[in-house]
Image 1 (cartoon, helix red, strand yellow):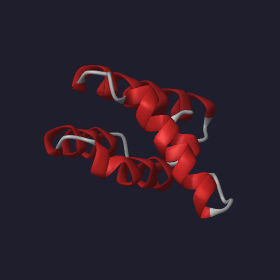
Image 2: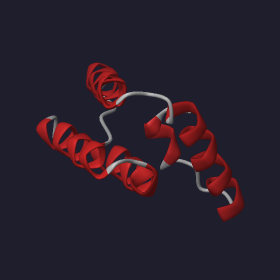
Image 3: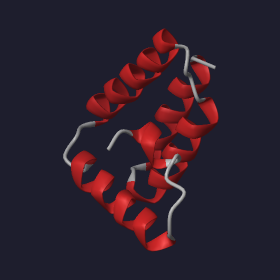
Length: 84
């Protein structure tokens, strides 16, 4: 699941928790650089398609906050902010 898809899920909390855990499992072995690359690529894809969703991406990063090292979380927010 892409980061941007996490915030679009409007189903039950248990499903959202499952989605967050699934995303965590997919991303847990990624280095900070890989996470930054994934976020940057998603931002670029959204901008090219004209569907940039800053709030959705920010919400997704916030949902992963507890699973990320503090520095990685802060870097992801900075990258997202730079594309705003």
